Length: 381
Image (tube, rainbow, N blue to C red; front, side):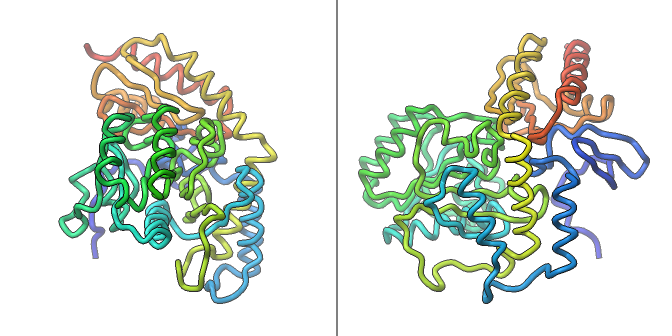
């Protein structure tokens, strides 16, 4: 049997990782400045993370949600405290797409309505409803398309108000990323988010903040939208939550009432997943990683802002989009093959996406800064 090849692959096979570095099967060392799409939040193989998972493997790794699991309670308590959302409830699942599916479903259960507003440049996942609110026709199959899903322009308050005027009473929810990742590190304005919140309250629509990539300290706040003082009805999270162990979560405002069978999952919130997520929160708290994200992100921006070929830098914390005056693929390939540094791209071909671990050190950022400078100074005109 062969793999169903849907990913364009670099000819690199990592076999070992530690901190912000990877080693391939040939012994070559790489600096990880992308974290596997912002998944590696506390660095590869953090000793506390490793120890907690190994310890749990000696106890129990899985049982279903038909029994009590005190690890779920511990995770919810620690997540509530560190995020400042102690009055919210937590539903655990396995991925960002699954979190968004459950958020959209919960919103519709709550108000009985069936239309959803999403935004240009969005990415919310590849499953049924999640891909229907993703702005990429190439991955939206005919079976996923439905006129119930309505797209509005990013940061366009006038169009937003027009849509609500015409269809606001039919909208079940509005789903928006705290910061668009795949879209090219696009940051919503405070006026835009405030208007969305206002219109949702006026029309009994649920405000869903997709913090799958922008959450978990990535932006320098626990969730990116918290910088603006916006209270979301539902928050979804996943990528940085388990540092590579599959886990997702839906944080649910207290106005929503749970009932048996409303939501469900087989693997979500299993013992190993909870231990991984608890370990991440422990490290984030003990090592002040949200503050480190703010400091290291600002340091990187200050050091590179005058480099040639950089048009703009869009950044919150360690969620960084470097917009070049050309397609970023050549720069990305040079960084990878000449300097052994992993970076990312986005749907905007000119944007180099930078998503290092939240515990990145200054000397590691300097490796990236010096390499980027050399690449940009020597790029073919």
